Amino acid sequence: MKKLKISMVALLVLAALSGTYFLTDAKASKGNKLKSPTSLVLPTGYEVGDEATDFSLKNIDGKMVSLKDFTQAKGFIVVFTCNHCPFSKAYEDRVVALDAKFAAKGFPVIAINPNDPAAYEEDSFENMKKRAAEKGYTFPYLVDEKGVGQVYGAARTPHVFVIKKEEGKNIIKYIGAIDDNAQDPSSVSKRYVEDAVNNLLQNKPVVTQSTKAIGCSIKWRS
Image 1 (cartoon, rainbow, N blue to C red):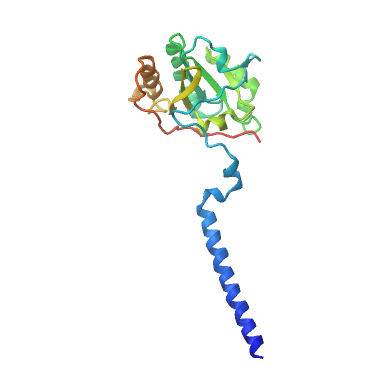
Image 2 (image 1 turned 180 degrees about the vertical axis):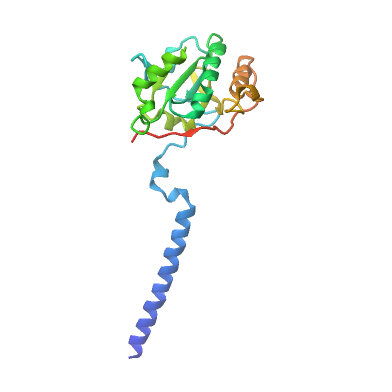
């Protein structure tokens, strides 16, 4: 009888300890992103100073485009953007202006649409072609069917990566927003991308190397 009571007490103690363990583990899992299998496999994205690997993506004219195609370029203004996002629309003219100002100086714009058209029909390849024609894009507008945006670490549209060619490598020099006012171009006081490219053209360090990209979250292809 005593042995039975001892066994029952032991089981109750083990159960209590197990419950405490699972509760603690659950709390740890909730606060620890590394517990998520998804977060373990997703790329972390580039940081300033990293080398960006080249890509090959389809342009709106049907041709494949890579960074290596721009043999005379000193660098690139890579903009992850799309058709449907209000922030992308608000910045559209400013992206066109960046290419007009810097392409001839060696820093062309490369626009990439990372969104899944199944989530937003407006972001389909056909609509990309229409939008580029309507707005008079002077730069490639590529469809990202290969997860290039995830490799870069793009999170929103628009999200900009300024790249400089250094000894045959594409080095990230700036990551973030185009400027400090999405709503009103006339009220912009800090032109992050423009300043970064001007620094690079003068062979100076980029003063502001990163900012928070403001825009719509990207809907990745499944």
